Length: 238
Image (cartoon, rainbow, N blue to C red; front, side):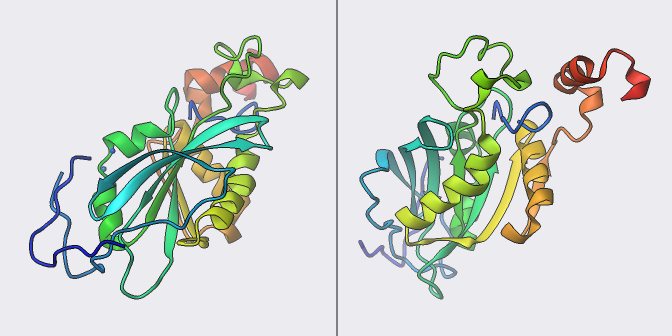
């Protein structure tokens, strides 16, 4: 690990379509000093199954993007992790999962939000998974992925991926990430996913939060599409 100078501040330039089980389940400033150990955040070597795609230094830590083959989804998936500087008090850091909104990928939040600044202060790792399987060439996946109940949509199991496979992969691949101290958040459809996942698994997460989540699907086009197809056109019956 490279030791950083304790005097000058660090400067850095910094940030589904979310799919849960159908039909209705789918943050440039100086790095502060004094609260974190001035040691570069270098994750433990990952297994061959996890491929490093990119690495960028930021706020004393690193943004890193990875690819792996998901047995849950049956395809290669990408995810992004911000590893903060190593805290003074612990060799591990808690995890905050971020679920992005409609049409996003794992990169939107990491590139645009600037959340790494706060994460570097608090010593929290940010984990942003991609928002859906990709490259499966399923008929209708670009138009009707949010409304799939037939067998051809069997790979769209983002709930299982986020709740089970991804945390296990992180625990096995990166010793610094303490997935037993995890929280979850998201925006829009990702906010809906965060709330749904937490309410179903409160024992797995320390907290949940959401930014403009889809919390009333009756009043959004996505929800209206699903309700209409499953429950009929009589809105008063919804």
